[in-house]
Length: 359
Ligand SMILES: [Zn+2]
Image 1 (cartoon, rainbow, N blue to C red):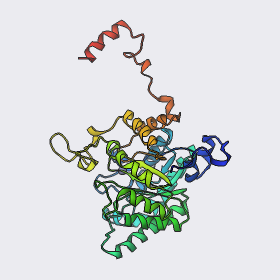
Image 2: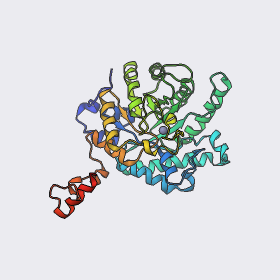
Image 3: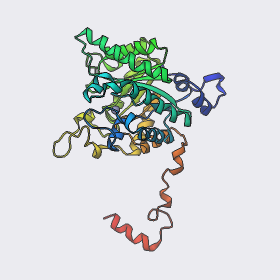
Image 4: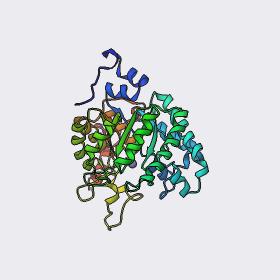
């Protein structure tokens, strides 16, 4: 069963008003929500995050860079500003010698997201992810993970988030800890699994079954994010849609994965080198492919349509426009009819060059 649409608040509230005023649950009932992530990859490309540890030190070191990317995604139509706290947890900050900055980094990330979200009526999501501390065979690690989530999200709640996204979960067990912590804080939870394996989590649950359990434990939105591109993530979606009554989220990476290399981690360059994580450029999907993904995911009943590592604002704008929206960045959407060489009334002196473009 799909989430009801268009029936929020008596049915006469416009989608815009609904988007500006309501919670994530209300917005999902009113229509699709567009998510944009991939902050870590994009800020690494821009020279503000170190590849390898991928810790978002940029939040404290160059906050304007984070503001700018939030603003670019907002102008492109993203409905949610996700606080850049991905990997801003104790385990990772210890790796780079910044454990002492843990609280400041988490608080500042939420403030930056809130500041930009308020410029365009977007929601703010707190963010936690796989910790690398969890071991399903060692119950004590569950307590470690719980403490890490509780301290991160405690700060997020104090700074003011609307809901929490728990993402790139490899283990159902770790995701369930996130659900408990988020539920205890009284916030809606969106929980997504990282589909790195062919059909199940690392602790042995089929993706649809894991989503069913997450929903039963109180997650308001469940689904998949990261690792797979649209062509290898979409085939997993129908079973999840059938398994749950709540909203479904799907946020692939914009890379051309395929049957032989179903995840970005398995893509290889022509010379056989691993492309992940910093040589994936030649596999990047076009904006048109991401627009097509948006329509395909809607046909499958996806409610929260998004994009993960590798995303650029041009992808997000194309996805928003595929949903029928005109967004601030649409002012500068392509008009190839005005290109000197492609316009209908191309001058004869310019048309001559088209022959060389066809060679
Ligand atoms: Zn990702």
